[in-house]
Image (cartoon, rainbow, N blue to C red; front, side):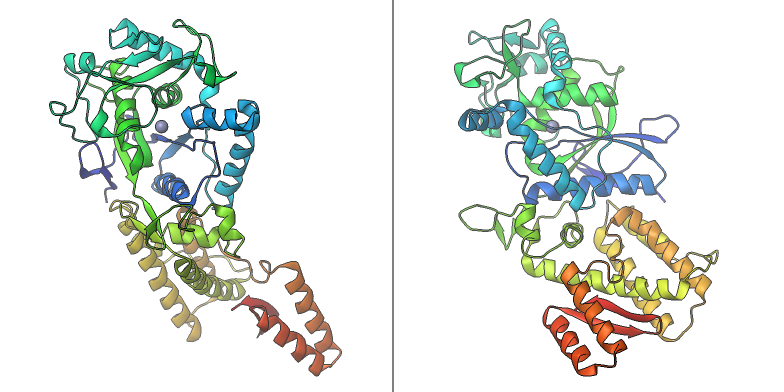
Length: 473
Ligand SMILES: [Zn+2]
C-alpha cells in the first residue's frame, strides 16, 4: 500500500515518493525553535509531529536524515539579549539546553543535525551573493540587502506557492525589515540586515558591510547545505507558512541551484495550531504552558506525548488537563496489558506470527498519518489481548510474539511502556518495601496501614503469582 501525505504545495493528499532514485533515502527538514525563551506546548506539538513523521518513515523502511535548525540569531533574540545584558551565546545556550531536555522528556528522537544559524554565516552570505548576482536581491539605502519580489516574479517564478496571494491587490514593492509580517504587507524582505546600534555586539562582516542575517535566509542556507538544493520533506507549524516558508522557497529557488525543473522542496507538511483549555494560549489567560508547568503538576513527558499524538496533525487540537488525565488512563491500560504479557512470556521465544497489529496500524498511518485509526488499532489489540489472557488462550511464545508486535508499533508511537513498579518515586517504593517487611513479619495490621497509606497517595499493591508489585491507580 502506498504512503500518502497531504502536501501544502499542491493542497492535496499525494503519494509520498522520495527524490532518491533508489527510493530509500529521505531528507527531512523541520524549522526548529527560536531560542529566546522556553518552548511552549504549542511549539512541542510541531516537534512531536515531526518526530512521528520521521519514526513512521523509518517504520516504512526509509533511511531518514532529519535536520532541525536552531535559530540563535533573529529579531526577538537580539531584543532579549539587549535587555538581559549578556552575550548572545550565554543567552541562547541555556534555552537551547532546556529545549533539548524537553524534547527528550517527550520521547522525541534527537535530529541527526541541529545546525545553528550563527555557524552558517558563510553559507548564508554565499546564498545572498548568488541572489545579488542574479539581480533578485539589492542593497537598499539603509545598507540592508532585500529580496526583490518584483524581480523574482519577472523571471516567471511564483511568489505565493504555499499560500494563494493576490499580488495585484497587495502593495508590493515596499520593504520590510522585521522577520515576521502579515500577508497584507507582502514586501521585499530583508536577507541581510545592516548593523544598527541596537544590535550591540551581534554582527558579522559581509560584502555589504557589518550586519546579521534575516531569519528566512537562515533556513534556506542550512537546509540546502545539509540536504542539498532539492530535498523531500519540509515541516513546520502552520504559522510558518507565510512569510517564512514562502520566503524560503523564493530565496532557494531564486538562487537556481536546483537541477532544471527541480523544486526546493517536494512535500511541505504543516502541523495545525494548539489551543489550551479551548483558548489560544496566552500568559494573561493562565493557559500558557511550558513543559515544566505540566511536569510540575505531576504529568509525565510520556503522558504529554500521548496527548499530543492523539489528534491528527492538520486539526486544531484542544489540549486540556482533563485530556492529560485521560492520557494517563489510556497508557495505564496499555501498561497493564503489557505487564501481563511480560509475565506470561518470561524467557519464551516469540512465536513466528506477530499478529495483525502492525498491519492495521500501518493501514491507518499510511493515510496521511491517521493517528486516530492507529490508536484504534492499538486499543482493539489491547482488548483482544486482554480477552485472550483472561481466557488463558495464550502460550508463552504467543505472548512473546504479542510483545514483539507492540515493540514494532511503539518504535513509531514512542510511548514505551512503564516498567512495573519502576516508575514509582523513591518514597513510594520505600513504603512498598515497609509493607512487604511487615507481611513477612506477619504484622498484618502494620502491613494494612502501609497499604492504606499507599492507596491515599495513588498507588495500590497487586498480589500476583510472581509476587507483589506496585501499580498506579
Ligand atoms: Zn525555518
